[in-house]
Length: 285
Image (tube, rainbow, N blue to C red; front, side, top):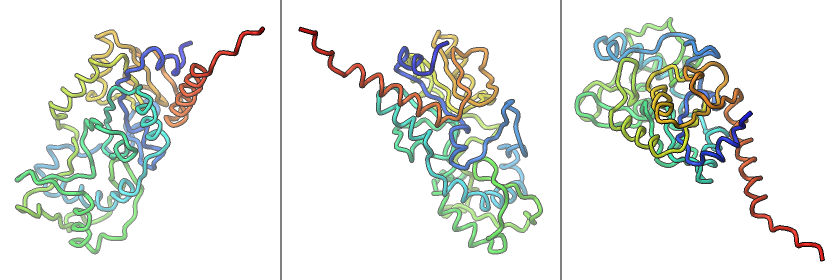
């Protein structure tokens, strides 16, 4: 059976697509279980966020309480292994569905963040960008009664909490124009920016193969790249524990933690490189 090392040796220019499974070892929960089914509450819809004052208060209250989980998360061994793979000229382009920014913090350059970055906030009126840490300070200053609450973490800086009086939560406006603030991420019901899809599609076109790392691919924004890869004859490998939407398209599937599989791959690549660089023994006289 083909190994991950053999797959990468045969296809050195990889289009790497990562998902939530790569960040679980950093303490950031996944949306889905081993069967690809969503766990916990449904994420907020763009329509609800834009049209409901209560939905925005609820979102920002839970975000204020849950944000420290993402803010304090650090890249784990899997993020660093992807960077090591790139340093060995094996990554043609890295695309992520994650919004935690951990790939960039691990030193991966020029990451395509399909769903945005939770560390940024933008004004829906004037377009101004704000650091999420700055908005956190505004939220806490405006809502001292909510500070200090703890709750189980859920994906993307949210917190599993329902008993608070969200109607009493004060959501600050944009510091420039007073407009509505929204995290700079793609909500459910919102489209991925066309330019990001175009850049990622162009990168896939120039790659030899596709490697999925820690994604069930249940969301079409990621799965479509598997469809495109398969249509163009590019083989696909996946590192993921549990079912993926693209199982029928895969040339190889590794069901193991991302860090374990990627570090084993790096070790194999380095061992092969050392063997290739070793001088041949001198012939016997």
